[in-house]
Image (cartoon, rainbow, N blue to C red; front, side):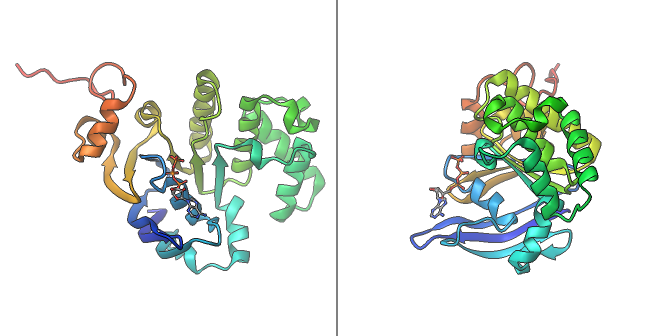
Length: 266
Ligand SMILES: Nc1ncnc2c1ncn2[C@@H]1O[C@H](COP(=O)(O)OP(=O)(O)OP(=O)(O)O)[C@@H](O)[C@H]1O
């Protein structure tokens, strides 16, 4: 397992928001986290990189490649984030500083992570932009001069630049139209294959779970109600809440919900 979340609870002054959650993610898999709005999916994913707001308390253990991330100092975490664990957010606009060009974002990101040679930095950035299907002319533009889909590609390029072991993608297609969203996920799947990283993928869209995930967990009111293999959960959900979510999803296509062909009983 590359990541094991063990009995993690997250509490605000008023209440327990994430309640005793455990889950494990295998190296190289695409693990989906689905469930109710406000059930704590984003907070759980932010807790992995120690990105929780300071008004929130966390207890439990988050074991990443055998080490408990909750024991790490803020300084240690800054080197882990980007290099070993990186994030792509739904609000990709908010990840960019409006008055800095794309090249300045790449520059700063690499300097922070100890890449000192300017020539290397430019080469790395342009290579990664090309890998996500963007051409060099975007390099000197400002974020507002790019479309939503292009900017989300830039955030994927930045997230993958340092070849992290774990990529956390939180509802990354929500702000895009369905064609651009589809392209972004195909690109992410392609880059994942090339880089061999593990993905924790937060989504409300069961079509994306069906197409990309290997395993998943379903959250409701701060708890995981069900987790396991995608085919098992989509075709034979056990928990009432999972059944309800799958039934309410837009059509998942022919055959069983997971896409496996139905076996006829003769
Ligand atoms: N800093 C905070 N202090 C107190 N409560 C918070 C804080 N941040 C988030 N919350 C609350 O915690 C709950 C879980 O939020 P979270 O963003 O993790 O949900 P989610 O499952 O990702 O929802 P969605 O699917 O709508 O994005 C919500 O009720 C939210 O309002």
